[in-house]
Length: 396
Image (cartoon, rainbow, N blue to C red; front, side, top):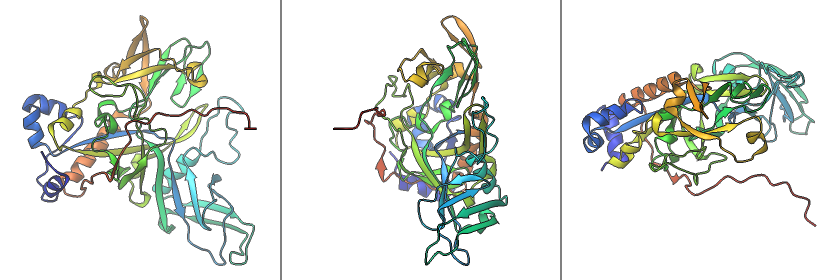
């Protein structure tokens, strides 16, 4: 019905019709599917929440004399130096040196990799301390200096796993309070938590990966980036509703973008009590309306999306595979779900409000001709399943 080239021509001329995933459902109800598919060019999707599998590559440039960093810390947070002389990788979940972690349970995890990334994008001055064993061409053995993002040659966010297609609802069937990456869970099902933008979320609007794939241009915290690979733990072969919507985690995306172009309000370090540190990100992905079927999939509503309810006191840590039940996102967003006749208060670990802000910002950039769409150079796999780590004895 339409091509990427035709849609990009309309974007460049300022004539593109762009709606958010929050708006498109009522628009299709009013216009009808076929008529809306002819009129609408792009639907913007988005999410905002913690994405632990995130981080960045940084290049400092060479000092005088030069150093080949073998150990390094930024604001006392360890970075990985097993690459070139002054390249490092900073992971979002890395703890600050000396953090007691869960030694005095539950730990507070006040500062770590995610907070360093937040401060870096915000333009703050940060301390680098590095050591070296010294070589003939890199004689310096120690360096301490302060820098901002503008002093760096490159600061490139490279995230192995973002934008889970769907995710668990966490509850606690045990008899004590537990601290998880989905927040504090009270015993005997006194509360529940979840983390997804539901009907706004990118891969829930493209459940079969028809438009989102390797090479797709994305809005990553305000910078134009792209999907560089399937995300780790991507598992397209999953249980789905009759409309194709996954009823479990399913797909993920590996994303990258230039941190120097990011907006600080969409890059936030996160401290998760009793668990660790993370990084909350805003991600927006445009879906080109190439035909009516693609448009129909963007009309998914919260009530159509089922999330698995998992016990995080026993079933999740022991990987039993048991799912208590499924609830839909309309119930979750109401602030209360019902399981086995018991009403349970539920809270979101992600922000629908911020996700909607991202979707609208992306839509505005497209309408102004500032953001063009890119077709995937390779589709995401639909038939992969996630493998487990098997504990084996050494082969004879």
